[in-house]
Length: 234
Image (tube, rainbow, N blue to C red; front, side, top):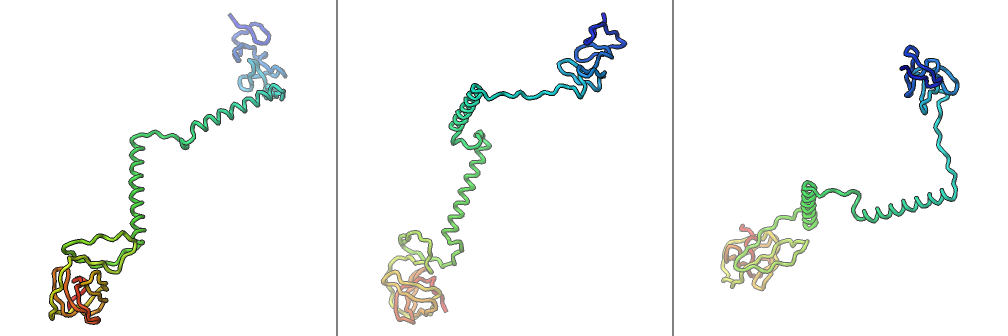
């Protein structure tokens, strides 16, 4: 059974049938709803299941809404609800940072590595500040024997020469011996010791042990004990 035309409502035979917009049309009936220009499948535009030409195709426009008291009230209410939701979200996320990151094993490993690096850098900076940023000149090791004197409080400044520590002993009788020359300044730390300066001659030297000797400072004439690593034989 042949269908009816969507415009003239007459039977449409296969030879003149146009199938478009869910309807059947005669070729002559398939025309613009406004200007009645005959259309084809290439130049028509459909709207509400009706054909239109390009010039008379209906344009969709926005509907203007009047600012009535009811619309203004709804607008104000919507604005207040938005502000309430914003404050709730802000209070909920306060202190959480910009983004929440899962505490995965990989993130924990990275955090631990960063902590180690920070600790290493901190100790390096501390040592640099403690040493004053420069290597300290090499000083001779102090002789040790029977007992150790208490270590002085930590200080960021170093003396020109270390203080020797030794066990107190009685001075041996003076006797002629080798001549020695002082290579460092030394200040006596005990009553039985003698002070001298770099370049002083030490005579009448008597060896006491590996670290100490007894002698007379030729410049001052004073006798007493002195550290053996502060002088050299000549």
